[in-house]
Image (cartoon, rainbow, N blue to C red):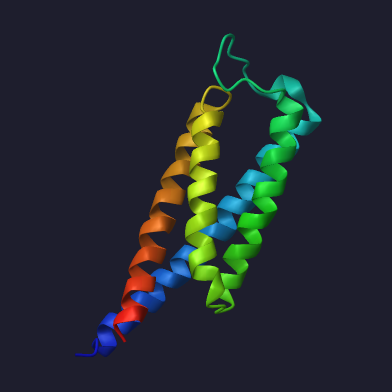
Length: 133
């Protein structure tokens, strides 16, 4: 039983969305990291937080993860098959990292987590659709 052309078109469109969303999230994370590493006064500091790190350290973590996420997003848009699974992995890492980042910039972290969840859903749908063919 093979999927219809409509189902294949949906899977391709969802894959393109996932790649574009990952590219966007990666750029957001990179810029967030630059802001944290360059100017510690931009973000609110929460006292007695379990996952408390120096903001400059957080900045560099966001810069590195942002670059990796953007590269994987670009690879998905370029049609690289390895990037689908890598996209799910980096979206999970990004969501977890932004959960830990919540006290520093809650509104932004929630937006990035929402994008990450959408990417995980989109890539899972695309991977599942390709396996049925």
